[in-house]
Length: 246
Length: 126
Image 1 (tube, each protein chain N blue to C red):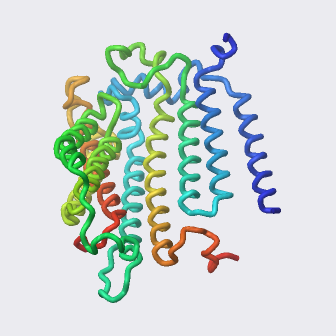
Image 2 (image 1 turned 90 degrees about the vertical axis):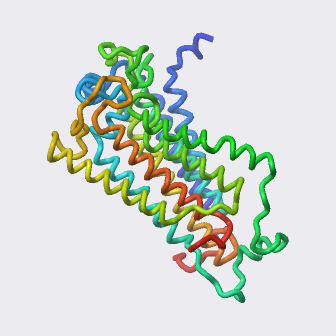
Image 3 (image 1 turned 90 degrees about the horizontal axis):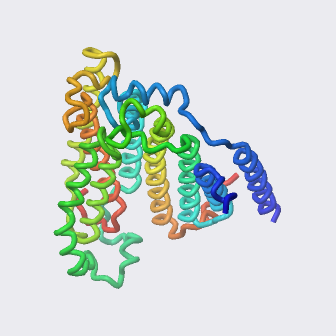
């Protein structure tokens, strides 16, 4: 009971702070100094129409590298926690007890509608993901969003065809290669341009076209592939079965 | 009617975000089911994202993307601050990673104890 009281008091005090914050809030009428700099110089200096992309990939590129690293570590952590151990047939896994009603080892197939819809829509979902990360410097979107769309396509596949396997080797290879190339591009920026992850190692191209803004499309393609495969691997780990290849 | 019209758009987002933070904190502190605690965390996370986005809003601003509607020369007066948007982009990805790890811990605990109630896990309680 006393605990409940403390929780209530804490929340009330937090609410008090928030009310103070919100009551003193006035909407900005102009950009901050930093935002002004990015809005003025971003398109001219980096050739990227999407200012958020310019900030994420180039001005704050190191943060994004750290973000990719955090995502990688969390994917690795999920992989470690949910690794599938081969058990002796005698020891009953909890999950096997859970689906005692189902025929052991086989999955309940998805309905015909879901399967057909997946065959029809999956290529389009994947293509849309690729479109989103390739156009990250031109339109809303980018590597992380595109990667998430690709992972949602994988989710779709896993729901419709539970028997399908995701190749661990392919995931590991794509992930490591794209992560490695990302760092290599960053180091090339130090050698050939202004600093780590500078996008001007390639020509800026024609402003507003697909192949422009220097290395930004390349970096976002790598990030998109890495994130897409990583999240697909995470989704695969959360699957209920333990029959997949270890 | 005019009072409602006078409320700045970003204040609505800010208040909803702060409300979500409070709901999420309440959920994390009072719920005993681990999945519900994780949902509380996600709510807090989303609330903080909304607060950050609302702080970056500039009156009458549009998305910070230069195109036919926002010419390069007029960009400074027409767009919202790109920095909080970029920060939120990072925060969403980190939140996703943290949630995934928390959920996999929940799966592991459920596997070994066959329960999701946090009260059952008393070994590391002081």
